[in-house]
Length: 451
Image 1 (spheres, rainbow, N blue to C red):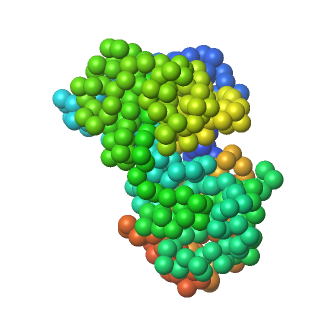
Image 2 (spheres, rainbow, N blue to C red; image 1 turned 60 degrees about the vertical axis):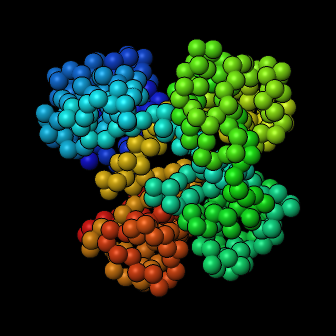
Image 3 (cartoon, rainbow, N blue to C red; image 1 turned 45 degrees about the horizontal axis):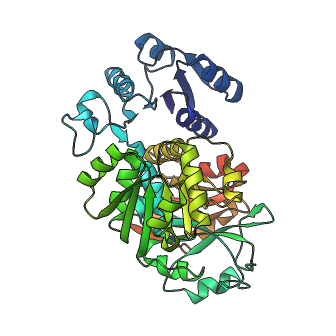
């Protein structure tokens, strides 16, 4: 596919890197010369430095005949203009990153599709969803959803007291026949492997599993966790993300408290949030944390626009007794440092947005790849095309064609998730989550393409 990306920041760069990895023809337009130079040095793609709303520049980028335009600059209006131009060049797929409620959702007064946008990506909602994955499955080290949230992939660190310690994956699967689940990756001594049924789980392992939502409670039980409703969740921040997050959490917890550093924003929050307790205060102050009973908090989530405030308040909340803490960070560096000093989860909005866009692109038949802890194992979702080598045959008949060390972890058919065995027949249109080593991805994809 020919894809034109407008915006070369973290979102645009991440998209270009992944889509180039998937062998698409990529052109990137960015007005900042330093960013352009960085992209040129790191990625083998066409890079043009200039205004993304310039028809001349977009023509140089190959917008004539392009299959898709991704407008992901921080400026809503520019992204809309890019999509409108792309519409006039008859580009079929036009995706825009849009933050303002004036252009989307219930507050929108116009139909944005009439302005050339075929799909809107809402940055705040993407971040809220990323956080809700962890609230949904307490204790997880990593979390991704597929199939509109009906299929979950979760990672957990294994401790000595967990029911699955010293059991083989074959035994665990046998004990949970009524609750489909499949363990797809294991990390031991910083090395990721794709385990077989004889793999025995040790304490200290980090284990990744995939399962339908109906199996969530059984899966969590293996790690000494439960999906019961949280008693107390504290959110802090004077951002739109904090408001949307508190609103979403009202359905998930018995008590939600929003600690707002801005008095003006706190009054605005009180007008919008019906079941959330609003407190004006600064969560880098332990007095405020004690006032909102942080010791009893199941989750403390720092969601302001300031990374430093989020990190400091989350660290203090953890020290004061919060069970699990999450911080939003705009900077990508120091991730491992944050984890090592006590922050359970660091959410990077721009990387989350890039992942969401890749998921949206996947609905257009492009495989979406999720890296597992930045190691050499990937979970790839891909559609079986008609007359492809893998479709219409039991898996046992095509097993020899599947790269060694790769497994088909799940078959997604309509809203159903199937844990396949050798007798499973792949039908055209089925989506599969394939777990494989990075080096195998290009060859595996050929199995799913029409001859």
